[in-house]
Length: 302
Image (spheres, rainbow, N blue to C red):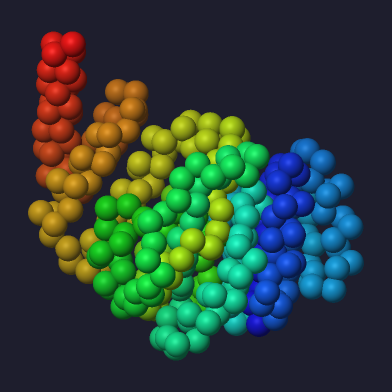
């Protein structure tokens, strides 16, 4: 059985579509756990009728906002009875064959405790903004291979709604590492899961990752926090597998300098990098100067 955890906060506008793409799955061996984190919109009006659905085992409404979606993940897992967990974010959607395809995939790989599909990006109205390039293949990784090949620079799992994972593997990780994060808890979660289990990548587009005003502005506002939390995850991976700085410093610096950050935030991040990974700072200055010169050259050509 799969336990489907639906954490919600102020997504009344999208809840109906999300719940339909869960309850109408072609794979029906699942329970649904709905968690509302003290929403201030009319989410409860949408959710209450579902409390009596046969598939719904819990509808939990927080009296006080937890302040962390990752705490909600942990709470949902604590209530779950299923062998597998699917965290179906309340503003996303899924192909109706998502669970069927994922359960078929993991059945052939008994050592896998984390599996993910690919996705399409959608806007508030559900219109497709972009689609992952896929070939239908399945790629198996040991935990170390996944961490080094897929997580070292940034996570390649863009959205937790595209994942399923074993409950017993989740219980082996120290959730205090990621549940206190504001932005990068999912990245930290994948890095920790890679330490305890193998991973399967299903190269099929099976979920829709919603982009809308509230989540986009929230991430823009927290981009500085996100960069610093990403560094903590990077340290975790590099320390675990004894990865030298030369393996990642250049790429990481290029990625970080691509962000349009205020200098006050950028300086804080560079100071944090300098203490742990000085090469990142050196490469960062290289790319800052390189990007500046390239911009000047483009302006001159005009």
